[in-house]
Amino acid sequence: LHTRTHIDAPLHNIENGDTIDNLDLNRVVTNCKVFDMTGIKDKITENDLSKLDISEGDFVIFKTKNSYTELFDSRFVYVDKDGARYLSDKGIIGVGIDSLGIEREQPGRETHRILLGKGVVILEGLRLKGVEPGKYLLCAVPLKIRGGEASPVRALLIETQ
Image (cartoon, rainbow, N blue to C red; front, top):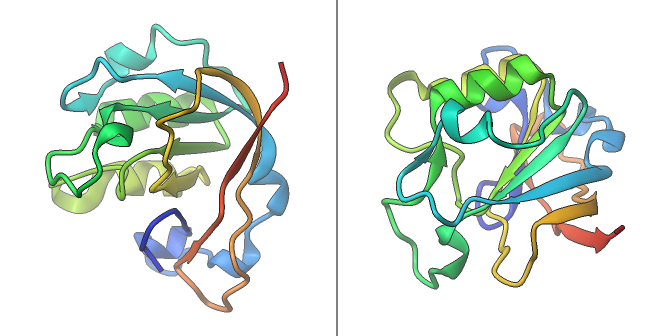
């Protein structure tokens, strides 16, 4: 369920969390903002995010150096826990990233717990190499897997500018 592009349901990291078959599709067929974060070498922090135009109700997607690597790199760019806290406090509905995980090597999987605990959709494994920063319509509908804690998706970005 966590191979390639996929969505994590709350159950992935929260005991008795909601499952993928209960996801409101309006949260994954929605307007989104793609941000260029290719200059970040390690992790996306609150400081990085505070410089961006992120508002309540946004679905944000981060294009990083990960999109330019053909092979798996265990040192991929991820969202740090303070960045996750910033995003959840902003009231976003979802966050996407071009790595197979939104966090790496964080004890307690805090980034997941912070975001999923606030009902933020996590979309992982995007491929954004040819995507320019800007506003798009996101279509990332998961399979309706009863009781699933994640689902593969085929994510599409449709230009709206």
